Image (cartoon, rainbow, N blue to C red; front, side):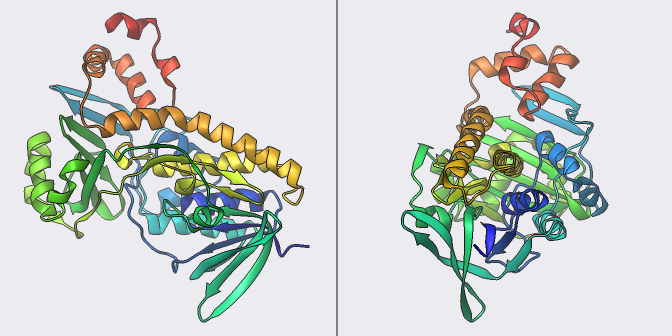
Length: 395
């Protein structure tokens, strides 16, 4: 008998959520992470309504709100002389979005997983996967000064874009698209703009309120500008904000910068093979996209939900049944995340198309269409639900 039914490698929002849901199914789950928790990580923080709804369903949202994270009940978009604004799209009885700091959100999810019966070990770095024939049967990891081996019927890699699990199983990339944007961001105190974004050719500025009266302001630039921007992030960042969101720039000039500059040009876009004999991938390990659409956390929560649902009632020690369940998970994930992936690639090109601008000018004439546009952007509805006759009429 294996030590565990499932070992989840990576305890950020994807891994901790997966461990939580599997533990609630009565499984023996071990959750491990190389970091010491609670710990922060680079993130845009924003959770779209489909993610917030899942947190509510899992009983986590009240703790997020109680942590002091402000509800974000409006959303706005400025582009091509337009100022679109609406209430945050409601979903599942929840009418606000949230952007919690990661050391808060990830820790709440880990604690919930432990309360559900999962074991948790932080400071644990996976070095190898244990195998029997062609099947993964456990992990060998270093914890402190010692090395330990744990057997499991299923190993789930939730360890990010540079996933060690994906590397060790040589998970193939099924789709990959070129790097498109780069980003720099920091936290500001004294900004009172609410959640939203500003768009122009070659620039995308996002503002995301979070804990402690702080607001992330992020500036996205084309990938080919990264080599210059990284030499002087402050100059590149402030120039982008000033040219694209001058009103926000004025606020920043009188606000307090509360953190260092953070940025990356490594905004990969891919889908990996998400399962194999004795292993599976969730979160950024399975699928990563440019952070311009702030879909990372929401996608991770969706993936956790999908893999737990696929494995419900399945014995992971039964290779045939587990393989069929994980195949179902991969198909469901690819279907659910394909549309936001494609729309994110379009945004990350930082070249608003004439067709999209024409559509935005049309929907701006109607509060109801504007609300539906933001429901589309937030993942509450899909494109086929948005493109009804009244939308087509204004194009």
